Each structure stands twice: as structure tokens, then as C-alpha cells.
Amino acid sequence: MAATRSSEFGDLVQIKKQLISIVAQCKERGLVHSVKWASELAFSLDPLPLNEIPPAPELTEEDARDLDALCLAKSYFDLKEYDRAAYFLRGCRSQKAYFLYMYSRYLSGEKKKDDETVDSLGPLEKGQVRNEALRELRVELSKKHSAGELDGFSLYLYGVVLRKLDLLKEAVEIFVAATHALPLHWGSWLELCNLITNIEMLKSLSLPDCWVRDFFMAHMYTELQMIKEALQKYQSLMEAGFAKSTYIISQIAVAYHNIRDIDQALYLFNELREQDPFRIENMDTFSNLLYVRSMKPELSYLAHNLVEIDKYRVETCCVIGNYYSLRSQHEKAALYFQRALKLNPRCLGAWTLMGHEYMEMKNTSAAIQAYRHAIEVNKRDYRAWYGLGQTYEILKMPFYSLYYYRKAHQLRPNDSRMLVALGECYEKLSQQVEAKKCYWRAYSVGDVERMALLKLAKLHEQLNESDDAAQCYIIYIQDIFSCGEQLEHAEVSTALRYLGQYYFKNKLYDEASLCAQRCCDYNDAREEGKALLRQISAVREQGEPSSTDLTLPCVFNPLPNNTTPVRRVSPLDLSSVTP
Image (cartoon, rainbow, N blue to C red):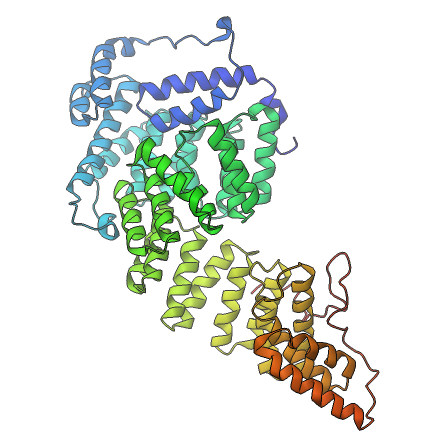
């Protein structure tokens, strides 16, 4: 449990008390998402005996004076009558009443903004409409902040207002102050998560030394694609006593989804569905996994199930969108992603998925717009950067593609797909040395699509570097065969054809004969295989000896246990190079 400070988790009873207390405080202020997070966490811990349950906090003079107005206003607030709630709180002095007064005005502005967004306005433009109340709220909160009169909750609201006004640097400072003032309020931590762009920025922040910080760090590692660290953090949190937490199980499932460990992620999501069958959060991520695996019946069942629970949730719309996309009904899929964005214009997944659908429909300008919106919502979304790269590739603009693929690669340095895409861009721009580096690195980090070596070999072939090309084809074929994959793998015949000719030119007739015989297993290479066998027979009849200088291993030699091919030589010394 080295990753988690054990002393902080030594007293789970104390943590449970703190959670019960913060649930009550957030409930009084209408902060429903923080209530849910803390309640789920509290539920995963053992119940407290009656004598350990924390008493309600004592009321101050100001609280007592504002009590009637607060009760009345809260009843209006719960019914979403925000202006009415604010009206009855306008003269109140207590911290609680002041927060609810300002929060009601903020939510009233948000509601009006959504109402003013006429239905005809598509989701691509929806982000342009502003909450008119923000500037006034900022001025008032700023004065209170300067006078040191804001508590943890009001600091959180101030931070939200600043973020909405795109004053991101100031927002970060305020959210950090909010976590110090009230470390147990998850909302402040979560807002901070959305503003941190890289690990350096994370390390530079001075955060409170509280057990909630471990949850924040684990969440942040997941967001920054530092999945190994995230999984270690979550594992230590489970060992510390939160093993039953559905929140942690869902976060671990999302982490496995991010590193494409699909089996493990699917297993955890199915486990989550058993424990919490009416859960909707993260089900869009679950549907992405079912989509990747083409599990149509399961995806259909999930979509129907979520529609029964709540069809007006963003996640439900995304799941249905994925279902239609899997059925190649791309117009319908895009329609559901648009619905998701009408419900929440800041839904990252919906923007990215909508971009993919527009790509499928060959509507590149709409795809570019959707991906750009995704990046506005979250600059860390590698899928949107990668999507932009693909779109500009279709538009035959490789310089643009290169820029976006590099951004995607920076976010996912060990994702072979980004490296292969980069290599292809460099090739189009005639930067062969860079392309070679990318392909070799893609192979070194674990080539998901098994294309990197093939592309590297073909590049060597074009550059007449026959030894290097042969080396790559050999490793490619050995890898394909060692994985027990179907020999119908698209390009095996290409590799065999090249190696047959290569061995023949180098007078290695036995090896050439082996390759030629294997070529006969493939329709597209059969004739060439037979022709090569005839050439070899003719040469042997003339009594020409085979060369004994075998500088390359035979392509069909078995691989050693560690799957490192015999005499693996990189075309360049690329071990330390990152493009």
C-alpha cells in the first residue's frame, strides 16, 4: 500500500463520519453530484453504530436568522425555480444562504441559456450561447474573495464562474484554494481535474494532504493516460478498505478501456452491472468496448435496457448512437450523438463519436468541426486529435495531418496506431528517415494492428535497401506465425514473394525454394511461387552451388521463447528515439 498513505486510511470509521457529514452539507446546498459521489463511497464502507453517527452541525446566530428563508428557498431550488429561490435569499447573511443565493442565480442563467438555444440551432453552434449572469456573479464573488469572506463551497462556485468565462488560470488557483478550504468536497477536485493539462502542471499544484487527494490523483493519472500509476493507486485504495466501491470499479474499468485491455474492461463492466443494474454513468464507455468487439446482441440489449431506465440521459444517447453505428446506419447514429449534445454540450465522447460518424458519411467539414469541439471541451482527448489527423489525410493535406497526429502521439506515446499514422505522414512528405523511426518504434511498443513492420519493409524496398527490407519481412512473418494467426493474413504473401526473390538473388536456393512453396498457398502469389520454383530448378540443373553465407536467419526458424526474432537488427539505432 505504498502508493496510499496508510495512516490516513487507518481509521475508516473517521472517514465514514466525514463522508456522512459532507453528504449532509452538499445536500443542503443542492450539490447533487458531490452528494452522490460521497454517498456511494460511504455505502462501500461498513455501517456505523448508532453512537458513532455524527450529529448535525450546530447552527450559528446567522443560520438561525436565515433558517425560514433558507428552507423556503431550498424547496423552490429543488423544483428548479431558481429565480424564485434567489429572490427569497437576497437579504440573507449566513454562508449557507449566501452560497444557495449565488448558486441559484448561476443555475438560473444556465437554464435561460439552454432555453434560449432554439431547437433549430444544431449542437455544433450550441457552445456559442453564453450564460448572461456570469459577469455579475464574477464581480460579486471577486469582492467577497478579496475580503476573505468565501467559504469552501463559495470558492468552488467562484471557480466554476471563472472557468465558464474561460479565465482558466484564475480558475485553477481558486479551485486549489477551494480544496484547501474544504478538502472533502469532491466537486472542487473534479473541476480541477478538467483544467490540468499535463503531469508538470499537476506536480506544480500545492494540494491539501487529505485522503480525498488519493482519489483525485488516481482520477488524474487515468485522465493523463498514466494508466499503470492509476491502477496502482486504485488497487491501494481498494486494499485500504474501499473494495466494494462501485465508483472505483468503474474507474478501473475505464482505465483498462484506455489501454485497450478489452477483456479485462468488459469483465469489470459486467461485474459493475451486476452490482448496480440501474447505473448509467460510464455505460457509454462500456458500449465503446462492445462496439470494438462487434458484440451486436450485447450492445442492443444494453441500449434497450438504458432506454427503459432513462432515455433522456447523455450516456443512453451515446449507447444508441454506437448501436446504430455498428449497424452502419451512420445518419441515425449521428442523430443520437446530436441528441446527447443537446442534453450536454460539454459531453466529450459525443463530440468525438459524432466526428467519426461524419467521417463515415464523407462529411469532412462537419467532422473537423465536431473534433475541434471535442478538443475545446478537453485538450487531452487523443481520439479527437487523431480524428483530425485522419480527416486532413483524407483531404490530402499531410502537413496538417502531421501536426494533429503528433498531438495524439504526445498524449499516447506508446500507442502504435499514432506512430504508424505519423510514419505514413512522414512518408508522404518524403521524410523517410523519420518515417522509419516511427514504424520501428510502433513495432517496439507492441504493434496493435501488425502493420508497422510491413510498412517499414516496403519503405526499405522503395529505397532499394534490400537487406533491411528482408530483415523486416522475416520478423513480420515470424511474428504472424508465432501468434498462431490465420495464414490468410493479408500481407503474408507479399512478404513471402519478396523473400523468395531476395534469397534467390543471394543464391540461397533452399530458403528461396521454401518461400516459393509457401507462396503457392496463396492465390495472389501462386503463379509467382511456381515461376520461382522453375527458376530454382533450372539454376540447380546447371549445377550452380548454393551460397553458404547465411547472413539472415531462415524465415521459418522457430522463434525463441521470448519472441525476440533471431538476430533482430533495427534498420537504424532507434532504441532511444521518439519522433
